[in-house]
Image: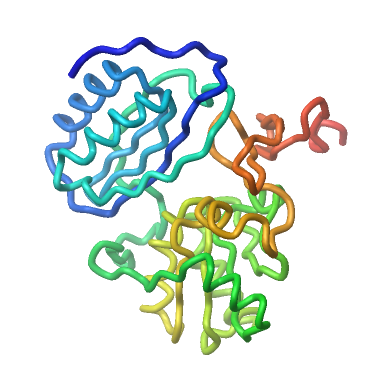
Length: 277
């Protein structure tokens, strides 16, 4: 693969891509080494997580560099259907390239005996347009935010329910508690959502296997909803896990910074509440 020049730290045409795929992977150290070599030669920066269950990637570079990354993934049958969602920025949101091997690409149920393979048991997708139509038409359903509480504080859908999670590992217990208390009705249709969809890929199948009658996941998550439906029924911004910290419905950064103490997004030029107490 031909070597290309790494782009400067500030440039008006940075392309950010993120995506995941649940697919059986093996020989992970070899795959890790190949990605590090080839992606470094392309010149992109970001983070790729690899596990037996699949891949989770967030990368940034010029349009040409991202095009080369897409070609790289497309040349491998395991990744040819990897959906990489794009958003622009004026700065690189990553300082280096990392490819890591993990037990899971997204940590979920602590009890391994209760885990469900998303690749073997996918939950039905709901398009952003259909979700908007359900909200427009005031359909009776539960819109469940599966993200952490500090993410939700940046923004969420109007009337969405959440579980006050500090970590996604707590999802199954928190949801079970919400059902037991009557806050969430498992007999009512549920639409789950998260930033890019990966958490819902694990949450929704687990829900279907544990008493919920009708569960959907928003296809492509909040990022795809922004692209397709803009800010319809959305309040605030969206927390993202890179140096942009937050993005608006037009997929542009808000200028927020990250509080290193509580992980909340802080408006540019402000100090976090946790440091003013």
